[in-house]
Length: 121
Image (cartoon, rainbow, N blue to C red):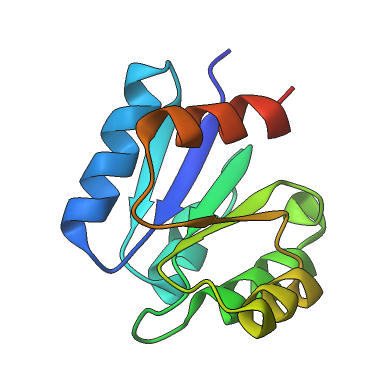
């Protein structure tokens, strides 16, 4: 059975690039444009991993992670921040919220797939 990955970014071009890269590697992908959209789309679904941007309208990546971690079904799934932010304070804030890892944009497709394979073993 294919693994399903949720990707959240307010930039349609980033969502398309991430989705294309993951689909080419054999994963199913669900796209969301912000944290609120993401929470609505994961309801009741089997999600194996999440890639989320940090800065988004309506609900940012940190708030999204906190909300996802409140749900028992998703408490331990890998969540990777995929963002232009690289400040140590933001990384610490993400880690405290429950982020598994951090990738700074722009990213290389091989990097995205490498991280995905590593955390979805």
